[in-house]
Length: 212
Image 1 (tube, rainbow, N blue to C red):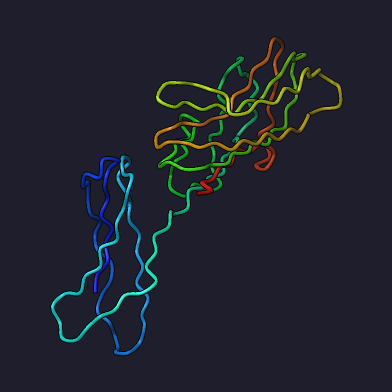
Image 2: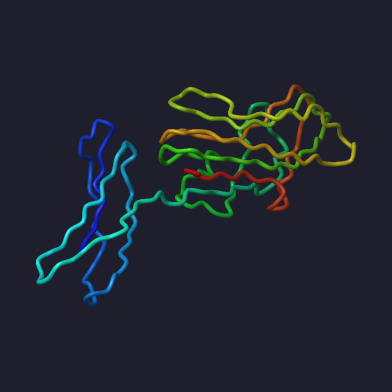
């Protein structure tokens, strides 16, 4: 007994079929669960489950067939203080606590959506200044087909040196993304030098997940 996933593009043209999952039923008159994982092409818009029974005696019945999206989630962090940023720079999240689906690039410090859906993101940052920083803003940015926009921004105004240390901020955003859209965290400021704490693994993080 086999099951596989057949994928089609938006025009309902056939794209591919994954390797079948399944096996030999071990007993009669008993329901047995079959499951498997499949990766759809990036341009897939529709999928169909194909169920087959290979040559054998007797009948086979299928029930409660369902397809769900796999888990897409990541948690990235700094591996050291970010103390020499220029305004507009990508916050250098170079470490990961987890990356289910391997969609966060620690070299580019950006997340790429593997498929279309609703995503949510959050960035928690602990920010100070080595010299008085003016008009400091944290942004969650998106690049969709070379069109860059801001999903959310949080202005924390000025951070002075020696004014009690670091400021903790959290920014969250939700967005409908297409496959290939890219999301990252950036920092802008008018003058001075903000410093993002990164010596503690939990001090500054960037997380995201596919909701549906």
